[in-house]
Image (cartoon, rainbow, N blue to C red; front, side, top):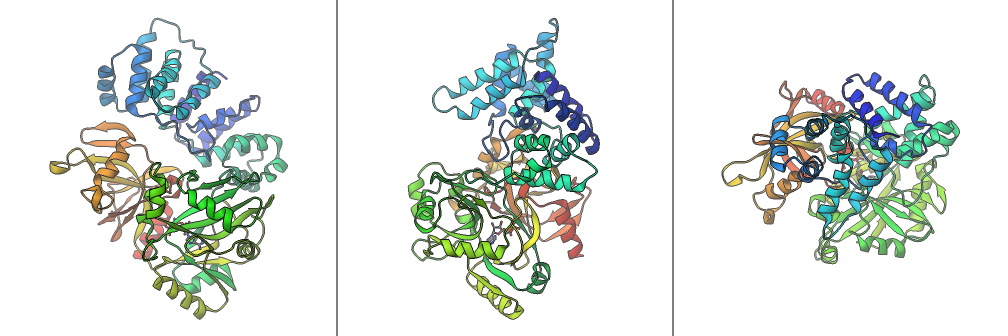
Length: 563
Ligand code: ATP
């Protein structure tokens, strides 16, 4: 397919604010896509080049994109930067530069989506000496043969900032409109379910084209990450039982991070976080524990990794071990200093069979059957099964005394629903005013904090649209040696800058943080219509993505509760 066709589609989507009309435009495009062999084009619709379960990023910084633009247009870096500062969007800059260059030539290009995918897919693979030059070559080769419209969206794709509003929900609906019956609610569920088990829109589309039966046959596969099931919040044990029914399983709610442990039939172990990022290499000891203490040829386990002090054997809060998730060097040293215990609480697949439709009771029994518990290495989650509220309350208090976050209360009859926050289980913890939010903008500090980004605008979400809800500038330390610092967060943010305006920068929304606050107020200053009073930065959540941040509905609900 010609890339120009896609660029025109992007432009149409960008200029169409209505979600329904966007869906129709996309559905129309998908009807044409049925004829194509290469369904990877569907990844490009969301500005990606891989399926969503594959967290490899194109990973191009603004600086590098500027260099590539300069190489392909012959216009100096300085001039491009000047224009970028004026316009604020490098995509528009690319549009203008190419238009200037090609004014006299006819706007006919031969750029294809295949060529774009081919070059872009090579980018994350490049490593070592000469990487930067090779990346610039791959990109400028595309830009040199692009029309202005193509250059605009190519640049935005490189920066993961497409701005067309094509989110997961819109694409899901468009698939139903293009392939199934949009009047039938069930069809939307089917497509969503197929997406939640595969996290791959190309696969879902291919199945949808074949029909409902093919969608229903979408299966889990060890080694391919699956979206985790999430839980609702309740205020006490009574509400917990009311939601999930009696008797129920009550488990410790550990303060660690989610780990999906996969054993492929070949014996290979692969570990994913909740944002579907692979962390197998960062946790070599976990692979060893799994081989040693879990029986079975192939499986997918859902678990929480919890840090503990190797000397005192006391459990640690998540924040103290979070660095293990991203760290690519000194792995062995970190493994000794910051060991984790794996607490397995669910199983989705075992020896060639998906178990997600089985009741939780059977799944949790299997977890306990196949694990040989080894304290401080790998154990099943601490659990009681009861219909007695007093016993449950006692267990909850015990969990808090042990330093756990609270308890989970789970329905014994419920299946596992990947990707959904349904009431199949609920969480109970002492009430705390906190939300996970994403940083969308940041401001440079002054005085001794000059050079660091020290004030962060954070946002919640409404579907996939981000809505600002406040500015946070307390909670971080000055120096890295004292804990999570301005310096460290600045470093991460600087890699994500999309545009700059005086002291403020706009960043790719990737950094998820936990923010505590005193109360929620109505406020016209932020696009969410709310503001957090006395917000404080308490944790960097590297295990979470913008899918996991608080929604406007949750904020409205808590606002009403406060009133
Ligand atoms: P929180 O910030 O409270 O962890 P969340 O919104 O990030 O909540 P939820 O799914 O709502 O995530 O809450 C449950 C989380 O608690 C799980 O994602 C998991 O990481 C963790 N957890 C700890 N212990 C358990 C357990 N025994 N069963 C299920 N989840 C557990």
